[in-house]
Amino acid sequence: MDEEARHHWTLIRTPVGIDWSGRSRYAAAMYFYQKGEMSAEVLEVYRICSRLDAEDPLSVLRRWNIGKDWIGKMTAEDN
Picture 1 (spheres, helix red, strand yellow):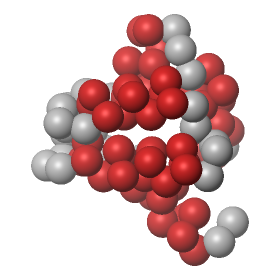
Picture 2 (picture 1 turned 180 degrees about the horizontal axis):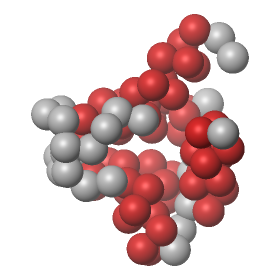
Picture 3 (picture 1 turned 60 degrees about the vertical axis):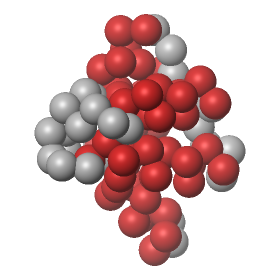
Picture 4 (picture 1 turned 45 degrees about the vertical axis):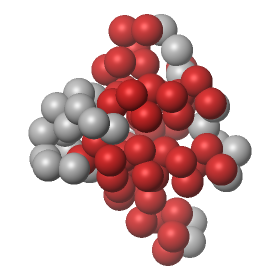
């Protein structure tokens, strides 16, 4: 993994509740979408959550039962 990808993995994991965290996660989500690693449907959840710093996009994806591949990728990266 190169330095830019590492940087975006850090951003996509910005903790919920921090000021501007939703926007940081969305910026990283756009990077992963452009790289073909995230679907448009998942990107849309990150867009919706971008103004909601206290909302965890992964929780929304789980509630809406979408983005299983992305959730799996996030879980795998945590291990």
